[in-house]
Length: 162
Image (cartoon, rainbow, N blue to C red):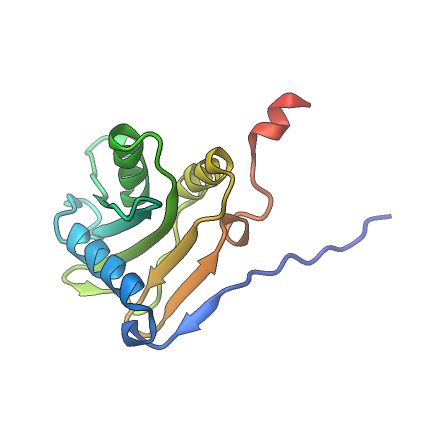
């Protein structure tokens, strides 16, 4: 007989950026700036991401669309790849993500796609520590401690060893 399981999402919700720490506000501003340089001619949905490394360094990324849609790359993945290429020994501590529809930020926070959740999950596994995720929307901001709150049944390297 099947047993029903409930998986809960745990997050902190803030009304606006002024409720965040100065450090998180700065990271969010960097994500907003990164999004302003996104290349999204097909969706008109520019996304910006900024991540903070354990060294204090901030790395920005944005989405880069392609007419061959599967070749496009998300903002989060761009930032993670840039960090890995330029700071291979560093650890991601926090990532901030924001999106616009046209010229205006989305009202509700936009969550990373499944592929980006998996990319962030791998970074947590590599570093052995959780990544804080800041999701910005004009009406509210979510702060989430750890990717398992976004990807509770994630695929990890432990599955490859069984």
